[in-house]
Length: 280
Ligand SMILES: Nc1ncnc2c1ncn2[C@@H]1O[C@H](COP(=O)(O)OP(=O)(O)OP(=O)(O)O)[C@@H](O)[C@H]1O
Ligand SMILES: Cc1ncsc1CCO
Ligand SMILES: [Mg+2]
Image (cartoon, rainbow, N blue to C red; front, side):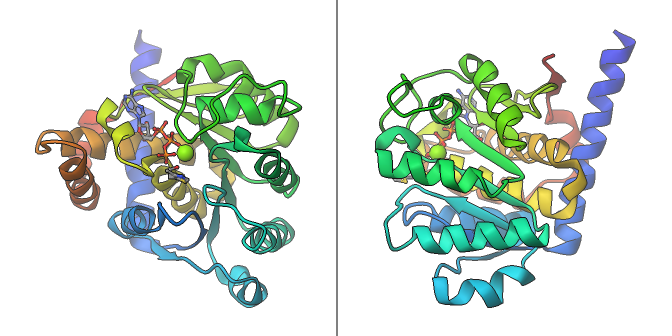
């Protein structure tokens, strides 16, 4: 019991430290993301104190990507014209030891998207964050063998994806995060759960994309502890959702109040809400 309490306190301390570090250092986060998520993603990063830049062109990657603190790649509206820029940016980050995060949105929608995600994983993302169906699909060896959702919404609970997440972490070398009622984060061995958030967050499009970008910002300021950074980002975003929910009337006002709550988050409020535990 004493040990459990100590662990909880340690997570609260770590999470606040990372929130403060992002605010202080304002890391530059390059996002090559889908058209739906750009606004919420940029506003989430700004509210957290980071500096978002939606720089997409292949022609700009070689000059811009080496200067960023982290990269966030999201395949939500992938096309044959956007994929080369993603590959070039991922390759550079991998060569230059710049942390980068992959969001495999609707990975099982098509073989084009599945193959692109498999190719991107070869450039060693620091973190892969998806919903349960996406992680189950990406973790399986082929598109055909996956029994997951075709679209962007999950048809599985996050706890259904624990073994798939561990396997994906082991085969890719990435930290794997699965969002849901409990957000799961694993390095292939240890599994940590963040129990924050409210169900209505699923009714705002791109909250998953936005939390992936927040993970990139947290990893940017502590790249040698990517698991801690990913868990903390998920918990902080969840806490912002819980605080926002107290003022919200529905998805649209929750979106606004979530961003406001993330911006105004103070140490005492964060520490009294963060709920992170070891799952195994
Ligand atoms: N049942 C739930 N209870 C609490 N929080 C939840 C629940 N489901 C999702 N969330 C939170 O909502 C956010 C988005 O997670 P979700 O799993 O919906 O992502 P996603 O499917 O990738 O979303 P999108 O594709 O729209 O970006 C996360 O911060 C997650 O913790
Ligand atoms: C709805 C939608 N379609 C492609 S990306 C996206 C945003 C949520 O992932
Ligand atoms: Mg998603």
